[in-house]
Amino acid sequence: MRLIDKNSRTPLYLQLMDILMEEIDFSLNENDQLPSEREICDKYDVSRTTVRQAINEMERDGLIYKVHGKGTFVAPNKVKQDLIKFYSFTEEMKKLGKKPISKVLSFEIIEADRKISRELRLPETTKVYKFTRLRLADKTPMMLEETFVPVELFPDLTKEALEENALYDIFRERYQVEIKMADEYFTPVMANENEAKLLQIPSMLPSLRIERLTFSANNVIEYTNTIARGDKFKYHVRLEN
Image (cartoon, rainbow, N blue to C red; front, side):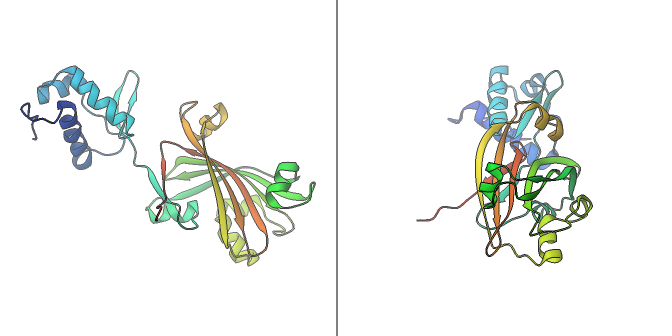
């Protein structure tokens, strides 16, 4: 067992953080409970102030989370999403060894309003599919998506097809439409009450709104507005000079 070196110039709480993070890496799993503050104090012979400072820093870094009245737990690993190339939720979850599931919560054909017609580059009142999907990985809700797709480009698209197949597989295999690129816009938001309920997170948890415009060779083929759980994703982009 590693011990706290009280003669070191490194602050005690930072030493304790290193020790606790090492325990998490090698001995604990996601959502496992950490020892209580008193147990950590006794084990490493440090004050409760030192323990609380270490715990608060680790919580701020997203390594642990607290449940009122129950204790402190190891935070689930976040999905790291690189933004240097096109990606799909289904394929990214499969790469991570997770089972992707899409629950279609609603599916209808509507007339595009001013905003949707502008995003899809279509005249107002053009018929579009509107569907809402809850995206899960290993049964854990990850994203809530509202998607708009032109009916003219994808006739006879059904709710059943979306439940059984990835949308981009449908585009490619059923309609022979290849995706060329996508634009995404990220905005930090607080999940509202309905979003929080569907995503199974506390109301007003910080989340990300992701707006995606997907392009084929000559058309915008999809506009999607996504709420992604802030505790489940981190996004990465490399900037080079």
